[in-house]
Length: 50
Image (cartoon, rainbow, N blue to C red; front, side):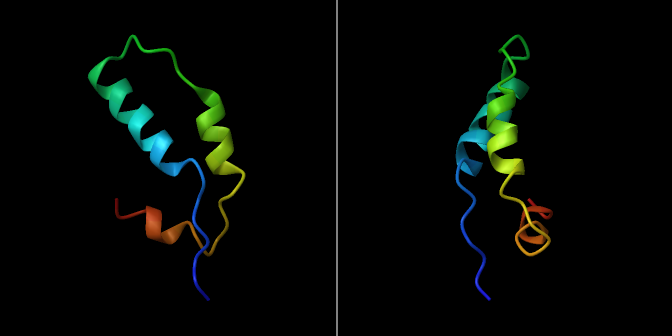
């Protein structure tokens, strides 16, 4: 079974990188929510080694 793409994952990764570089950046909880709602036991393991 092929993993379905996770919409918004790239935007979340970009946001996390900005937060690391500029901690004063406002936290965008919607990005986390959008990705979290798509996570399943099947598509989560490929994210872990990142």
